[in-house]
Length: 114
Image (cartoon, rainbow, N blue to C red):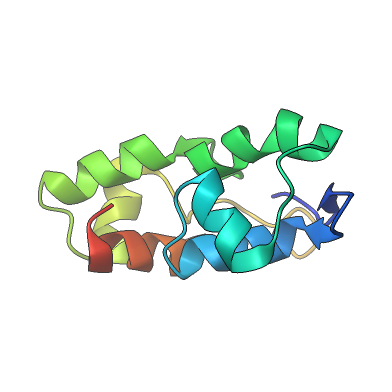
């Protein structure tokens, strides 16, 4: 599970802000520029944005592509996507409980199909 940290240092956009934009439907850097104001130019934007956009569940290392494919193949609930991909089933090391932070993004992928 990723901890919050500054990604776009020029415009002070953090990881959680970017993930929330993804939950709202952002899937490209252009959409992140529009929604949260990442700059594209700082080292964080250049080195991290593509990896963040391509990942859904950091705990279980599940990609956006894997979740989209699961949805296209009929997984129509967060639970079904988790059964197919493992997303949303990571364990929080601090609490020992299921993490689940990616479930909002998984639901958005189901809802908009991308």
